[in-house]
Image (tube, rainbow, N blue to C red):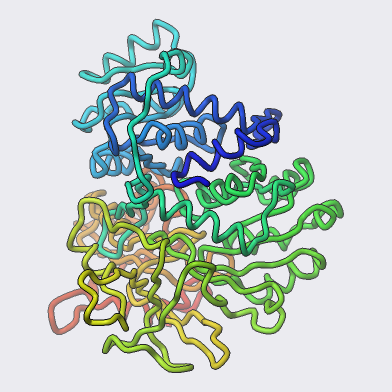
Length: 536
């Protein structure tokens, strides 16, 4: 039985290793071939001097090398840090510096824009590009990376076999970065135990088997996207990798690869149900899943019409515990607004402000206990202490209290034990399946040098879940129309697409509360319907 995350692949390779593990465009990689590649990646990392637990960052789109780098890092006994490929170079730099990454996997296409930022990453000593390096280009890039080693994929995989570092299931396996409510992203530390237990739990209630083919459309830096890989590998299923451009590309891939399992976030589902579905999708899809926000009931019903024989799983999770709840497909028609009950091998509590368990229909904070609770936030004891706290209801005689993760989400539990999401306790923006910190947007606005005040928040949006509104006060005498254009252009350059403001509002002054702080609540209330054309 696998205890470490890469051992899920080894177990399949040692069984019937000729089964396909990964499908990418026209390529098929079997479990045996994938395991062999992981060992070569591990040897390359050992040759590069990676120490046990040190961080290896992967900044690549979804492709075979990305998966090999992630699980090869684990196989070496190091810790992987998948970086969202949509992030801009300064945001990548922050993650590399904060995680103290020692080695980076990226591509020749991405490296030139990234090189100047990497020069500031003092802990980073090696950059591996997944392409072949020609001598002239290599020399130009090396000149921009003083003190760092640059190697291409082909040479990296040629290192002789070396024994990896020994690790156990409670050791750190990965750091996943998720935006925090006070600005910079937080690095959630996940152990091998967290990830293996999560994979087995999800595979259990999805009833995955080696016959399944799962389409991976979510980013691998997103906990739900990474979970699709680990869940599939735990069951010996196949995963088709794709970075889609248009929703219709997803439907075509379902038909092309004969996909049986498809998971997505509500904004994508909202778009997919607006398209005509090929008849073949209903023939092959066994189940679909939702994560990253509440699924609109109308979208769930539209999916039911298109896929009458498929099982629909509505799920809730947080990076700090991977998955927490799911609604059984048998209950979707009866209670489509519910996030269900706890997944296998987890317990979900609803706790009030006094730290007591809530009764039926009493709102409280969702608290998750069990094997999936992460190890905390990397290099951030203060935020760790806020979110990871002793589990309520324990026996006072326990010498070492069990830690649980406090989600920050308000929920209620009905008389039958089903949970319903109420609201977030903080100001996080949930857009396109991502959690976006308002402060990150505001810092970009301030960084433009064009504004003296900035407030970002989310407003309801039918397709995105929430859309981002940015309210600013101008710096200097710039005309509002000119400021709007210049600030919008600046945001487009500095922010990934999912963090772009849907509307920029320019005010002469911002409201403040009695403490002298910007009154976010007043602004949010005033502009809640701005995208409907009604700022009141």
